[in-house]
Image 1 (cartoon, rainbow, N blue to C red):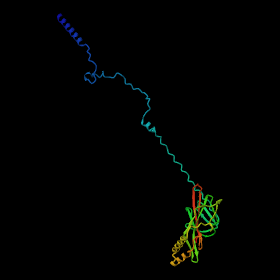
Image 2 (image 1 turned 180 degrees about the vertical axis):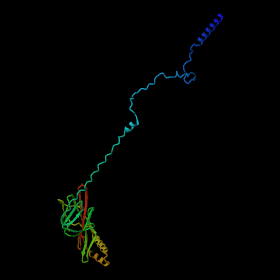
Image 3 (image 1 turned 120 degrees about the vertical axis):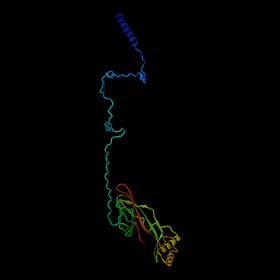
Image 4 (image 1 turned 60 degrees about the vertical axis):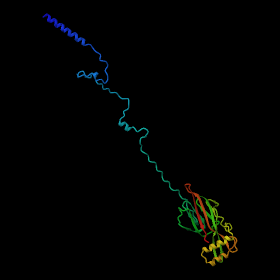
Length: 286
């Protein structure tokens, strides 16, 4: 029995020494990423518990909140916020400048609304429409009164009155009166002298009238042309031509130079400072 106990103790001691030898720690080296043999898998749920309490800090951010509400309230950079556009004030319509008062007196009156004139003691008939508000000129036919030496009265906005005239050579004898229209002359514009809006007509007397230049041949041709224009018979045309056979000048009888028409140009400025120009013509019947 003692032997049996002794053997049991020896066997137990041997097993203990063998186990301690196998229990020595071995180094397995560093864990290699991607190597599944080095991954430690733990199946015990108790060992997998997180022992660190989750922290939920309330940290205020130093950056401004970038929300849709903020973006909606903030206008885009470089573009000014839309504002109500103020309507441009409408300029009040200015009334038209008042036209000068028409002149009073007896004679030829021409009222162009922007200005008016009066040629005293002259009777003349207007050709065309009587309303001259939008006309640039007017033509009259002389009836009575003296033109040369007469006065032209104008409104205060007139600054200048100029005159020109046309003369024609007339043949007058026992056969009648024959104007020679091809022998005529028109002068240049000449300013009239005036004071206090009154201008005097001058230079229209018989001695002052400018005559056209013509020689004997020109006179004969002009008489023949005028007679044929009147549809005279051939015999009558020859009689007219024969009446000037010895005439060498337009101032030699039976020829004379007469006034055919007179024209005046009236220049000035309206109340707004705009320049205007109107013309008046008087034709003298032959």
